[in-house]
Length: 221
Image (cartoon, helix red, strand yellow):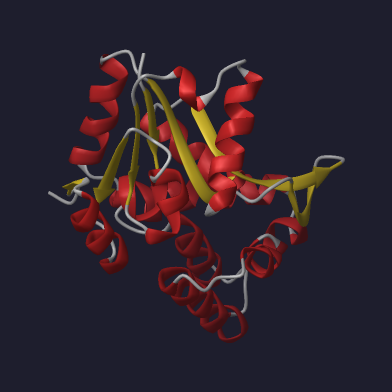
């Protein structure tokens, strides 16, 4: 059995779900546009540049979850899926996931974006296993804090190892492992698998993939 890992934002999705969630809340009037929109854009640009402080960002990104009732969040997310996410899912991305599932591979989506945002997206792809940043909750409501290690950069390796350990497995147990990603932020995990694949890569990852002879593909057809 192969282990196959998929990054989500700008890999399986033709966009960033974390950024789009914030913009959706702004457009819906849940968040104040002037105060939120510019900061959301600034954090996204820091992510692209590789300078993002993940804990600072999560303090910003998880705050709206703590400020609203779960029923409201669920209703908004259903609208978000229909209006923002499904249009970002192309046929090639669905086909790639299906190909690996049909082959009997152990498939998981691994993403820095929090589980509240990404759980329904993983289900949309039919992927059972999701490794994501975990928003803390108490008494049925989000606190605005993160639980455990954020699933970002080296944290993706840590969270993958924790997930495998819960199944009494290790990455080394798989003769073949594959990770699809668009971002240079994912180099720590790309370097750990036997088959790293750069998907519509950013400039830094494209250069690294060319230097190392990694496979490159596009899902934007």
